[in-house]
Amino acid sequence: MNKWIFLLSITAASMASAADMSKTCLVATCNPGDKAVTYSTKSDFFYACQTRELSEYTNTAIGIASVMYQLTGKLPNISPETGDPELEGENGELIATLRSRAKVSTFDEALQRCEIGKNKQNVLIMNNPEDSHSIWVSTQGKNAFWMPKGFLNKR
Image 1: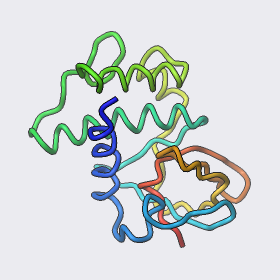
Image 2: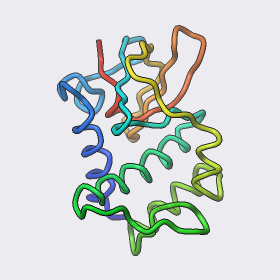
Image 3: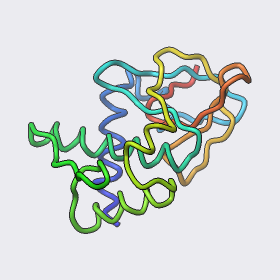
Image 4: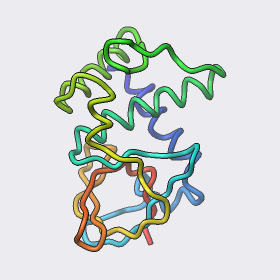
C-alpha cells in the first residue's frame, strides 16, 4: 500500500480546512468525552457516515481526487463502474480495499449512506481509534457519525 498518497490526501485536505492545525484531532489529543466542533466549507468538506469503514472510503476517495487536482490542476478520471478516481497500482488497490471494507460496490452507494458534514457543529467525541483517520462523534447524544479527524477541532 502506498501510504504516502493516502496520508497526503488526508492531511492535505485537513491542512487546507483547519484554521488552527494545533486544534485538529489529527494533531491534538482528542479523547472520548472531549468536546469538539466540526469544520466544513463548500470547497473543503467531509462526509459524515454511519460506519468507520464508510467514512474511510468516501473521505479517502474525495481526498485523493482533491490532492490530484491541487497537484495537477485537473481531476482524475472517474471509473464508470465504481465512481472512484481511476488509480493504478497500490493506490488503486487501496481504494478497492477501502470500498470492500465499506461493503459497497460503488462510490454512489456509499454516499447514499453518508451525508455532507456540517460546519461548526458541536459534538462530543465517542471513540478515536489510533489506527484510523476517522473519529466517532455524537451531537448531544442524538446523532452519532464517523468523520475524518482533520475536519474536527477540539474545543
